[in-house]
Length: 394
Image 1 (tube, one colour):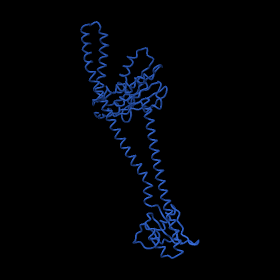
Image 2 (image 1 turned 90 degrees about the horizontal axis):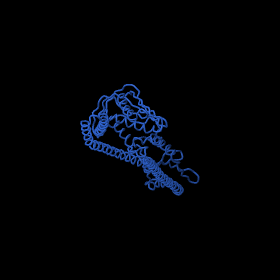
Image 3 (image 1 turned 180 degrees about the vertical axis):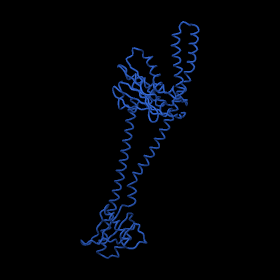
Image 4 (image 1 turned 30 degrees about the vertical axis):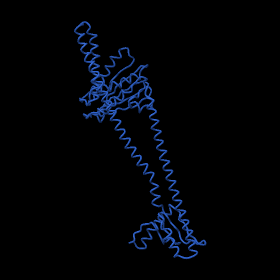
């Protein structure tokens, strides 16, 4: 159980580390973007200063020469307007050459308005008189750099998601293979001694006719072992499904535990609900139900326990709810109870509920979930489809 808590902390730590890396990447890239924008602004300031000096010494010809030759290497869009706001020159802007002057001016004016919202225009003055204004936008390099970290995070996230999905698929496949191999090997190992015990029971019955009661009980226990071996065999193969009455299935399981608990038990076992028929393997569903009842009995230890099974119909089929008034499951462990290896008991293997989940969800295509759990009440529900599911061999 402690290992699962560490697993949760590790996942939270990895998630936090991923967020920190993404934030650091965004912070660094946006810092580069700001530096590039500041560099572009400094270049325009130098350009405006040069235009002012050239205007004071020469004339418009040198100004045009300066714009055409010195600024030729500029990579960001730029528009130069006269004091009246009319565009006189522009660069790195795609304008349809087939348009007339009015249409071109309208397009440039709209573009200048958008540029001014993003960057304050640079004024070119001479002796306090405005000569022109330089309007500029963000270069394509800066724009790509601005979106680059988001693209990197998206690609990395998709890679991690695909990798995690593949890892989960492989892990689940390995887990099913372990379940199948363990179940088949257990059934195989139990088969020989059970057959031998049945032979000895028949031998004793023929040799000692007067001890039939003891032999009957011994034979019943051997039959129980035989049933357990059959359960392991079926959980590792594709079982045959029959139409099952959930009320009868629940009563059969409760009768078994009533017999084992005895009349002096302080645990009350009950079954109620409406008749519901589903398709399933009776041996496996009874095993799953008994696992839930055993856990309920453990939870009720040391108190006057009440364990009940409620049967009902759903739109998809039927359900069985196992309720108990035991100690409950801590909220922090709700998500772990169906994981292999989780157990609240010091000597527990943590396989009962995991096996139950495999029987219900993988073999019968149903659902197993913890409805509620708190001190004094725990509810676990098994939902089964009404139709005949098609289990797959694992």
